[in-house]
Image (tube, rainbow, N blue to C red; front, side, top):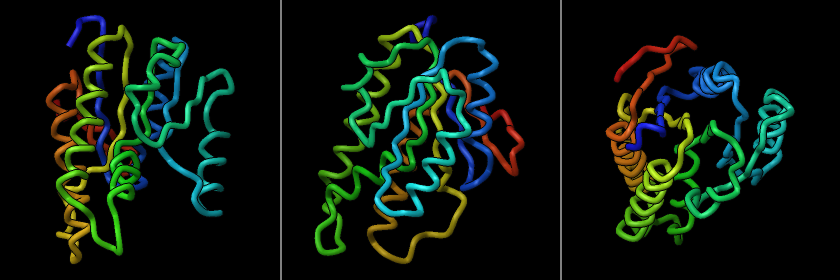
Length: 182
C-alpha cells in the first residue's frame, strides 16, 4: 500500500458500534470526509434506518450511495478521508444479483465479490486517502442452516480476510469498545 494511503478495517457484530466508531475516527482527522453508503432502501424499515444514519452524519460530509462497483465511482470522491459503510451490505447486494428461485449461482457470485474487493483495493492503493471500511465479522456465529447463507458467509469472510491483509490497522468492536487486532 502506498505510504500516502491508509486503510483501517473495522469489524464487529451487528449493532456493535462500528459505524459510530468510524465516524469518530474520521472526524478526529479534521479533514473533509466522504461517506460511501452501500445500503439500499428496499423497504420502509430500511428507508427509516438510512434516514436516521444520514441525520447522524455531519452536514458538510459528501455522501455517495453506491450499492456496488465502488471502484468505478471513486473518481467522484472529493475528500481526503473516506468511510465505506459497509462491506456486509455490499456483498449482500452482489449476492442478490446471482439469486434465482432461492438459489445462488455460487461461482459467478464469488468471482463478482473477488472483482469488487480487488477493485476496491486497487483504488485504495492508487489514491492518497485515509479509508475506514466497516464490515460485520461472520466467523463467530453458527453455520447458516441453508445453502445461500453459507455461500454468503463464505464470501463475506473471504472479503474481510482480504481487506484485513491490506489494512494498516484492524479494529474489532464489542459493545462499542474498539479492540486493536492489527
